Each structure stands twice: as structure tokens, then as C-alpha cells.
Amino acid sequence: MLGPSVLFSVSATLAVFSTLMAMISRQAIHALLYFILSLLSLSLILFDLGAHFAAALELLIYAGAIMVLFLFVVMLLNPTQELPRKNLWLPGSLFVAFLAELIWLMPGKASLDAAQVINLSEVWVLLFKKYGVLVELSSFLLLAGLIAAYRIGRK
Image 1 (cartoon, rainbow, N blue to C red):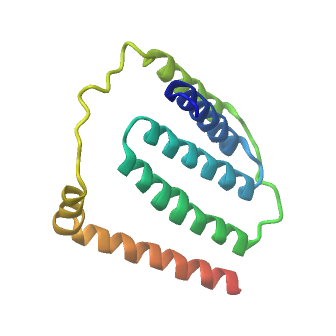
Image 2 (cartoon, rainbow, N blue to C red):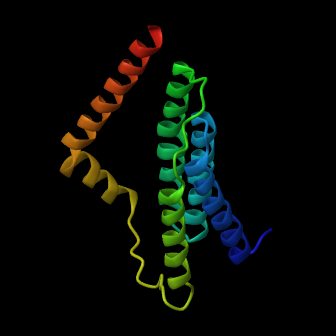
């Protein structure tokens, strides 16, 4: 079994590489697949840091549901041409800024001692009592996007 620092390092390297490849990929399908890989590695990082519930939410909601929905929409639209690549200065500058932030926050400067444990009942109270209307509105927004993708795909 891999140690925590090795697992964290491998998944962090994979997250950075797959995010960079998602930004510079010329085909939409490849960019989405790289982005799904980035979300999966981020879920592994959260799991390694001890945030098991956040890792499960990241895995189920983002990598599992939303990105697969995006992938199906892109496959439904069937883009055959490659995306135009004008400049790489914006993704490159974002990548350099991200790496600079990682170097600045290396171990010794960031502390995880003040982490607060949140149980499932507190999440339920926040989602369905305090923000219940927003959860329902976002589900209607996702449904409208799915119907629009279906209508565009039929044409």
C-alpha cells in the first residue's frame, strides 16, 4: 500500500498534468476526458487528506454526474472539427500562477490542524432547509440544459 505522501504526490501530479492537458487540448472530447481525470485525482487528494465525505461528493457529483452529462452532450453534438488554438498564453499563465501558488504553499506554511469536522446531518440541514430553493432551482437548470441538448441533437 502506498504511503500518504506518495499517494498525494502522485495524485497531485496527475491532477496538474490532466488539468494542463484539458486546457490545451484541441478536441472537445479529449479536453472533457482530461478534465474528468483531473476531478478524479482531486477526489483522491481529498480522500488522502481525510475529507472522505468531500471526496465522495466530488466523485459522485462532479466526476460522476455533471462531467458525464457534459461528455454525453458533446458526443451527442458530434463535433468533428478541432478547436482553434490561437494563443496558449492564457492557459500557460494560469498554469504558472497555479504552480507559483503551490510552491508558496508548500508544507510548513499551510496547516490542516484547524480542520472542522462536519457530519452528514449538518450538510442535510444546510442543503434542504436553508438552501432548499437554490437546490431545486439548480436541478431545474440542469434539466433545462439536458432538454436543450436533446433538442439540439435531434436537429
